[in-house]
Length: 317
Image (cartoon, rainbow, N blue to C red; front, side):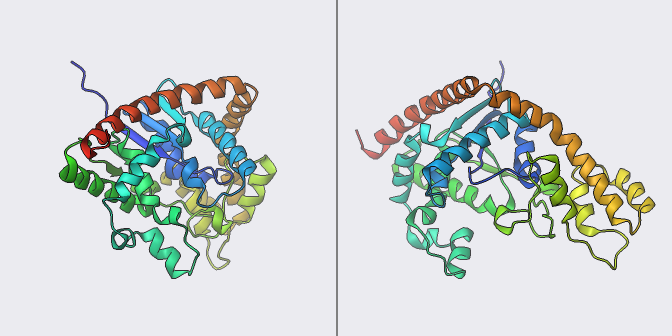
């Protein structure tokens, strides 16, 4: 008798163009792990509303992100791919979690403390973000959640909410999710040496044109006093083994242009076939719609059954 695969669940917000930091920090893991787990990947459109208040931009970014995921190798035969708003039950569950959470507890969240320290105008949605993320995970009985270190705390909050709900109302969530962090790609450096992020403007686009990618690579900050450009090397080791790079960088000490050209060639070698797949999916919107429809129906069916149990446990029947 085969043991059921654990559910792996993760998502990426539709807030702009995907970059190689997204790919190596998260997306590649999803592709590599989709044979090992019952993989659920969703586009968190409700989460995006905390910062996206333009309906056309949200719709366009969502459509583009779906194409990106299919292009990198997310296989709808192996992975349940869906839009968060096709499973609205998560918002009901997040409200129930809000009713057993306290404000001081949520104020411990790193994202909230960071926003508060910067005197940002924090929306209620942003404050409750960890509760909705927890609902996304546990409504599908998610057991494994690939995240960066900056999101690890949110998975721990989900674990604590599972325990609190089960203790308060009775067991509805048999699985406590665990964070999966691959230290080798936990933080992908940007063109300026900081973490690659759209908010820092230091990204290398995953599906940019050759010229856009070249412009980003050539803008990588280098230290004129060093024979080996640290920032170039830090990105390059995502594409080649350090053994290969050692020889390349020794042969080109101080030759920053040569090393950037070599990095550019490696990036283009990876993304060119992905771009071809993306174009093929873009030309077949009906297929893409059908993939999302099937994924949404599967995820919603599981959520509906879970919420029946949750309502029974809480007395909402």
